[in-house]
Image (cartoon, rainbow, N blue to C red):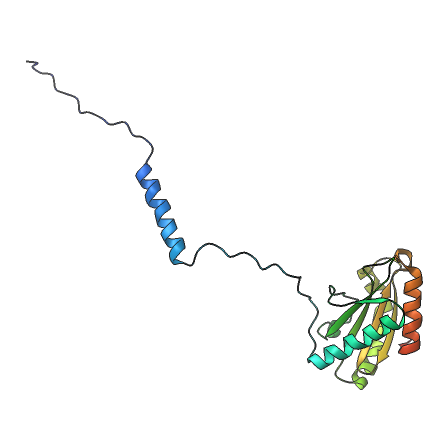
Length: 194
C-alpha cells in the first residue's frame, strides 16, 4: 500500500526508575541486617571525670573520708561524685589522683569544692607542698581561675588539700568561712607565699 514510507520505531516514554530504587533500598536493608542493624544509641549516664583515678580503692576511700569528715565537722553537707575541679597545678602533678568533695549549704546547694591530691607518702606530699603553694599564687597561673580567687593549702599525711574560693562570688560566705576555719583546725596549713 504505502510505498516508500517506512514505519518509525515505537519509542517508549521513560518514567521514574522504580526497579533501580527498589534494588538499591533492598540492598541497603540486607546489608544493614547482615552487619548487625543500625547504629546503637549512646549510653546515657553521668559524665566521666577527667581526674586521674586513685592507685587503690583504699587510697580513694582515705581521701574521700578525710574530706567528708572536714565538711561534716563544718556543719555542711558533703556532695560526693561531683564533677572534677581542676585547680592550677604544676604539670608534673596533673597526673596525680584527685578526689573532689563539695561542701553544700542551704544557700549554696552546689557546694564549695575541696580537692585532695594523693601522693605516694607523706614525705612526697611535704616535698611537693612548697612547690604547689608557690604555683597556686604565681600571677601567670591566676589566669586559669576566676578573678579574685583565693587558695588555701593543707596537708594531712600523703594528701594535699586545696580550698579554692572566690569571696566576691561566694553564694554562702558564712559557710565558706566556717569551712576554712574547720580546715585550719583539723589539718596542717601550708603557708602560701604572698
